[in-house]
Image (cartoon, rainbow, N blue to C red; front, side, top):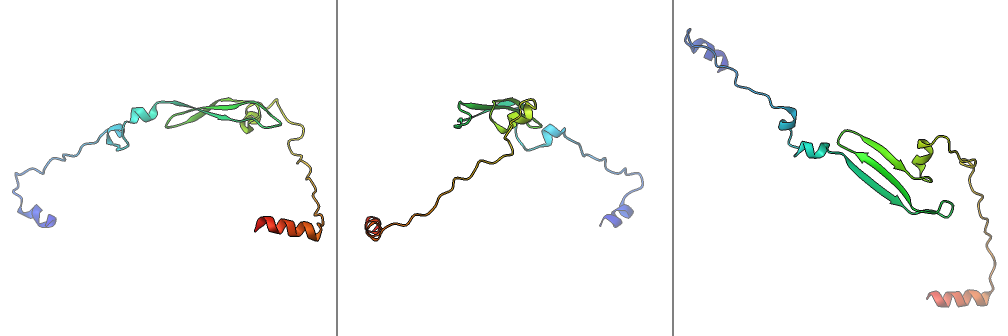
Length: 119
């Protein structure tokens, strides 16, 4: 019909105005309150210490919708080595020696006692 409508129109009749409009990106989105999402938040994570590195470990990160920054990292966490390049471990690449265990033979009486306990 669009092709024939041009021929049916009267010569002095003007074309309809384009009534489209554009919204700002914040108003056009259906994500909710954009200002709420852009607000920065602090995320604090704590970890227990290990036998080699006792004490409570902490990692604080500042996060908003577009970026995240690492604010604080305790010594002993993996990120602390990257954050503090001056502190290096001398045995970082050396694995711990494997504890060797060997099977021991047991007597027939001990085997029967163990089998009774499991049944």
